[in-house]
Image (cartoon, rainbow, N blue to C red; front, side, top):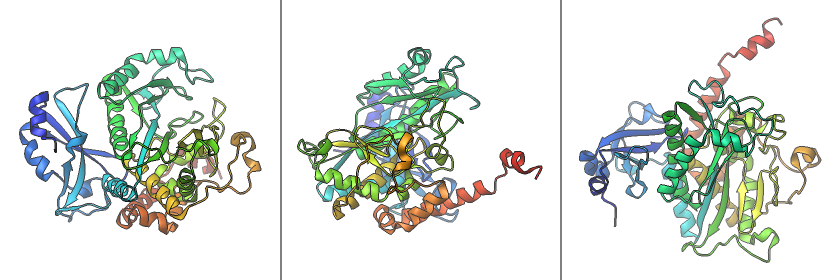
Length: 435
C-alpha cells in the first residue's frame, strides 16, 4: 500500500516537503512544498524547468515534473517540521530517460528480471572546512599521519556525533565514524542495502552532512581533491549480489578463492572490462583526475588507484576482495552521482555475468611501490576528456545504461571540459608569462 504523504504530514507534524531530484551532474534540486499541497504533488509532481538544471533540455521543453516516491520520505532529524522525499522525473506523462534515478531504477529492474538483487554500501569521505572554503576547519589538525586521530575526531565531536545520531534515529545502522587519512577529512559508515535504497541514502547523507556543517558554522565538501598534498575524497563501494528474495548471496562460495563465487568473478570481470570507460561516471569532474593521478601525499599514500587491477585484501588496487561474498570498488570519488554510481556498477556487472567475463589475473603486490612491474594492466584515464572518450567508445556500456542518458551526459560533460579548457589560471601566468 502506497504511503499517503498528506497523512504522514499530519501524523508527524510536517509543515513542508522538499521534493528533490538529482540532475546529471549530481546537483540536488528541490521545491519546498507546503503540506497542504502535498496530496496534489504526490499525484502529479512538482513542476520544474529542466533546462535550468543540469539536464540536456532547452527552454522550449515542456515542464518537467518531479513525482515524489513516498517510500523514500525522511523527516529531517534536525528540522522536524520539514520532510525530504526523492522524486522521479516525468515529462508529458513519460519517464525522463536521462534522469539519474530513472536510469538506476531501469537497471535494478533488469537485474531483477534475471533473478539478481544488487546490494551495496558506500564510504562517502568528506572534509570539514572553513565557511569560505579556504582551509580545513581545525587549525590543530596538522599530523603527518592523521588517519584515525583520536584527538582530531573528538575536536569535531559536535558535528560527527550529531550526524551519526541522526543516522541511528533513521534506522540506517550506522556503525563507525573516523578521522580519515587527510587533515580535516572524515568518513562515516552505515549498513549496506539494496542499490536504490543505498543511492537514496547516499543522496540524503550528502545533504545532511552539508546542512549540519553549516549549522555549526563550517562547510563540508565531497570534492575529490580539495587540497594539494592531501589525500582526496573517495567513495568506495562494497558490492554483492543476492537472489531476488535477498536471502542468498550468490557471490558467496566458501570453497572458492577469497570466498568469491564464479558469478562474483564474472560480475567483477564486467567491472574490470569497462573500468576505463565507467570512470567517466565514477570520477565525473576535472578535479577527479587530480585524485586518481596524484603524486604521493603527505601521509605517504594517495589511497587511490591509477591502474585497472584487482587483488585480495590489499588497498593499493582498484578492486579488493576484503572478505567472502563481496568486493570493494575503490575507484569512485566524492563527486560521483549517487544514482549513476549504482547504475554503472549494475550495468557493467550484468554485462560481465551475461558474457561470463574473466576479471583477469589478480595482483598481490603493493601497487604504490611495485606498480611499475605490472605490464598488462591498463592505466585509468589521465583526465576527464580521456574518460569521456573511453565511455563514448564503449558502445556496450552506453547501451546498457541508456542511449538517451549517455548522449545527454556526454554532451554536457564535454561542455564542462571545454569550459575548463577555456578558463585562464594562475598556473599559466606563472609558467609562461616570461617565456
